[in-house]
Image (cartoon, rainbow, N blue to C red; front, side):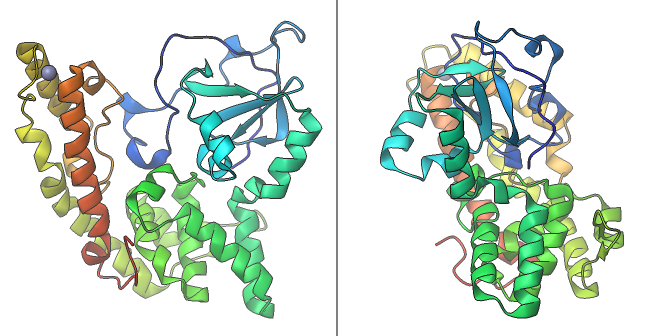
Length: 338
Ligand SMILES: [Zn+2]
């Protein structure tokens, strides 16, 4: 989703080799893990010609997770969308030597700003602005315009994919409200493969009032879930809270890798992971996929053997939970997980 960009930004080089920040799915609402605000004042008012970059007025998405720069202009965009354009681009984006700004990897392109802007427009990243997708779907459905329906379906499937790996990297589209609107549209056009991920976002990201009272568009129109979907959301929310204990059970039994050479320190870190999850309410939340990340403290301070093992166990738990979303929610979602 595009938002007002800061007046100017600068690039700082860091020695931190972490990957890009990922989407909302792992940590929103989890205060200890919240992403930093990239529009901090110290990033602003840096002089052009000495590293200053002007954020592009349109292609600066609040939830973008990488920054491309070209001709003195910065584009904050989505890694998953850019990297799927070509093998060459994927190779560039996987490069570990990218510069960083506030934790986001920055890639300096040799192209002009106009060329990059035209390219981003062409590949449709702008359509991640969800209100636009929703408008196209409503028009497409009402007047039976297949091109618009196909386009809207593709965008919904990109934002609410049916495999865990794709879902984890999917772009964030202001889920607190958009999921409600997307669910209404998915029902309207009969797109069942997105339903579990949509219900999950509705259950975990929306406050109850949004589920019950609906979402108002800029022009005042009210979008409300059907009574059945409203009830399904509330039931699914309760079920997810119950399932949370099973999904996060692995956190209670974490053990050091047999190859760990710093068992005492790593045991302490495992205990901290558990304490942190407990302190932020992770075990009583419907957000069963928001598990502690290996790339974030305290897990990232485990030894390399233990962090590898932690990643494996976390992935298995999240993958299992994701595959079971239709069951937890009582939804038939066709080829879910395939
Ligand atoms: Zn260890």
